[in-house]
Image (tube, rainbow over all chains, first blue to last red; front, side):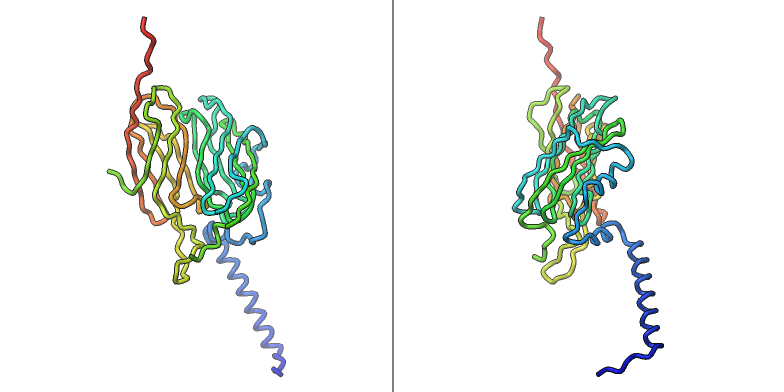
Length: 166
Length: 115
C-alpha cells in the first residue's frame, strides 16, 4: 500500500495542474486556425446555424434558389465531386461576389471560398472535396447587395478522408 | 514561363460574348496535416493558400482552398469571353512554392448576318 501523500505534496500537485492547464489554454490561443480546428470531437457536428455564423456574419441568409449538387452516398471521402449554382443575372448591379463551401464535420469548417463577379457570366462552380465522414455540406452565395443565399445537402460517406495512415 | 503543372481546358470554338466553361486541374498533393507517412510521423500541412485566374488584365476567378479540397485540385468556373487573351493561372502553397500556368484563349468575332 502506498503511503498517503502529505498536504504539502498534494497542494504542490494541484498547483502544478492549475499552472499546466493555464499554460495549455495559452498555447491553444496562440495556435493557428487549422491546429485549433482539430478540437472538434469526432461525433460532434456543427449545426447549420454554426456554419452560417462563420461566413454570413450579421447579414441575412435565406435558403432560397441555390442548387448544391453532390452525390448522396460517397464511397470514398477523399474525393467527392461537388457543384454549386446560384441563380443571378451576373450584371454590374446584381451579381454573386463569393461562393463558400462549408462542412459540418471536417476539422476545418471552410472547405473553400470562391471569388466571382460580373465577368463570370454565370455563378456556378464545381470542385472535388474531402469529407471526414457522413455530414452536411453547405453552399453559400454572397450577393453584391450583401444578402446571402444557401443550400444544405446531406452526404453519407462510407470511407472517411481522415482515417489515413497508409 | 510555366511553373508547376496544371491543365486548362475550354471549348474549341469560342465566339465573342460567349460564357465559357473553364476546367482547371492543378497538380498538388494537398497534404491535410493530419496524415501520417509509413514511419508514423505526421506529414506537415501543405495546401494551396490561394489560386487566381487572370484573363487579359481582368482577374476572373479566385479560390482560397483549405485542407478540405481533394489532392490535385480541380475547379470548374465560367467566364465571359470578349476577345482573345492569355489566361494566366497563379497559385501559392504552404511551403511558399508558387505556380504559374499560361494558355492562350482564342476568341473569334461574332459573325454579323450579311446584307
